[in-house]
Length: 289
Image 1 (cartoon, rainbow, N blue to C red):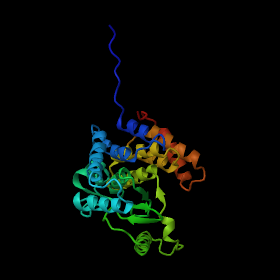
Image 2: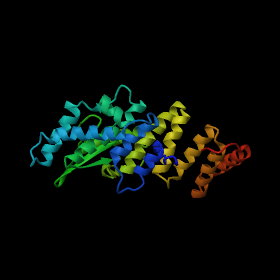
Image 3: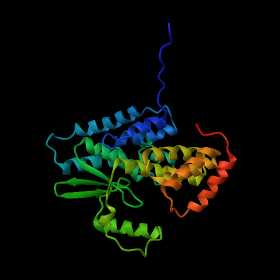
Image 4: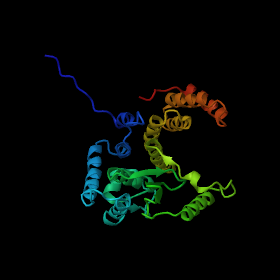
């Protein structure tokens, strides 16, 4: 009798690739929770989703069937920030766990974008029209109600006025050396972020943490996800190639850098990278599997 067919479970990267394959079916919370599988491959992502579902169910049971959007939003903010105690991790902002949904659920501490992912899911389950906002330097949430809207800071729980948003934008310009640039209105920086945009922001936060620490294996895992998530982003392919080079995977590094140069033939760093590719090809070595 022949042995039974054995089906191997997908790797964390393969699972992530399946989740982000199509925008129309992209479940933000599930994909965001799966990011932690690079640290904990056995993490039960479905259990994370069930935990958030349980929180939403607790809140829905308290609300009358005909509750207005204003009542729902007030109840959600009170539940999220006061009762459950979610807020920003001001004491350890650059801890990588702040980007892992299951850890944010456990500690009730995170960064704006990871807190927003949980808040957005709860808002959606209450029937609220909520969006993430790709505000520079600080991820925000907008909830539309009738003809109006409320912009919230998931880090602090504050409702933000236009004057406060302008202050935040000016502070960001000052911290990044853009103070003398064209003074664009704040509305241009309140663009809704797609689920793919939000995941990219979470991954790029992790990317900077690992790059600053010189943690090349963890950085490679993040770069693998960014290339899968943003297959047309040449810069992510380039950056993966540079990490592969640092780890000694020279043929794979050369392949990524060549792909970047083919996609961006006029790139300012093109001549330097062409020299690096030539050096990598001379080194040879085993390909990355």
